[in-house]
Image (tube, rainbow, N blue to C red):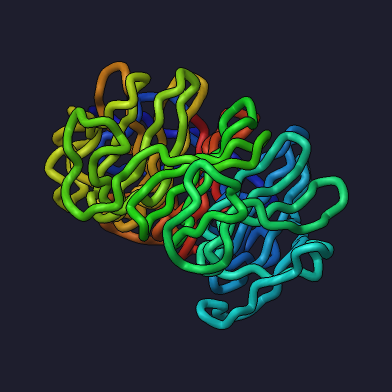
Length: 360
């Protein structure tokens, strides 16, 4: 496939041009822009998750380098840190707290992801504390939505605040804001919290080790290392398997199958071809657009991939497979993706310590 040269977009005085890679999505213009991070703004550290509220404000979470929350208002070029404390590592330190108080005084430990409601409420996957925290967008008050703070597995069909988990690595809010999906990775399960009732239920995984049983009911098969979950507009649930290097799909009959990398082998090949025969390497996150396409942060390949469910093909969107870098169009272990209100894909370019965006 011939790569069509992109146009240049300038933000805060810095211009970037999307460069060549493997087979890229055949679009006329593909812009790649640094939004946050050096050299365009005050530093951010290991950004793992990004999302938008209803006003177009961008929110993000930093992992262990920063352990902070930040926001960037529509049209702004400088982020505001709104919560957390810059601590080199909170893992195992117990430095998580602040429920019942303001977000500016709270501490967060090992945040991996977030979901943002239209009203500005933040739902935080605080992995090392085994909880999902909630920040009220109007008052700034912090509370716990799910998890007891203790490792384990319990609580299905009961109140989410009384349920234990072993590492919520990802959270995904449905478009109607009624359900929050959770990737409970170390329990090898995906769970769902009803935000109206506050109750939690099992979606996928029987907690056992082993390969996925193709075509099984999602709750009756092992689901290897579910690292992230996303839901398409038609209700299809997609699960990112970190160690399985794969993408799984749960259809409306609740049966689960592999749609990317049926062998599970590590690799970077297959762009432009059938997704079932393609490879990934340690994918970490995913999101969907209004057409049902799935965008995957293929972290250890330093790329973003696009899965088209209609054609069953996989495409390279950003990054150079197997090569990390800070240059034109390059990424370094991206851990988060979301589609913004402007129909650009926003990427947590985690180990380049920045947020970038790519035109879809």
